[in-house]
Length: 196
Image (cartoon, rainbow, N blue to C red; front, side, top):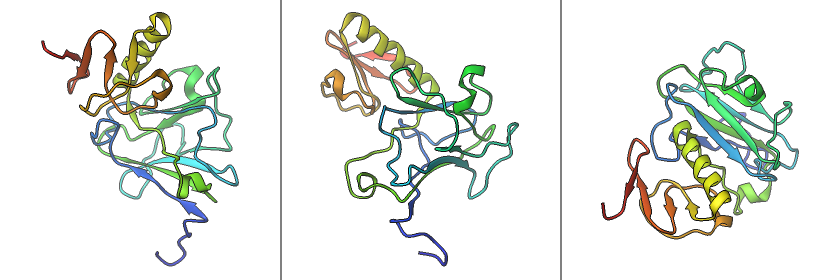
């Protein structure tokens, strides 16, 4: 621990360098972090933040916003969940409250800070949600909508390990599957059906 650094009881700094597919975060892409209702970073003070960096530095952006903070007036989804949109340009006027500008190109990293972190984050079961690249997020949303409508699609996302999940276990780590056909996304996100 360096001079003046906080102990883990004061603050933790989990950092992501790759997205949910294991691909380096790149400012030319857009990303989403989806927090389920009641699943924001555990903090005894309810103080947390998410910030993008290139190396150890912020990169200037058009709205001078360098983090999403727990103290901000964020826009929650009707089910109480929260989406953070990380991209170089505004996602849409009605989503700007949750927009975290990232560098316009090149690699960067995301640091989440939780002050006086809860035990679930320090030693417990809490896991931060994955950083999902925008195209994959759209596919997952379409598949989730189809599941809600017809009840045949079961989700997860990337690893190429296939195991069946029930709908309540959809928290994210990689494959779109149906009860009729198994679907493996290739590097572009297109569906490769097993046995074809």
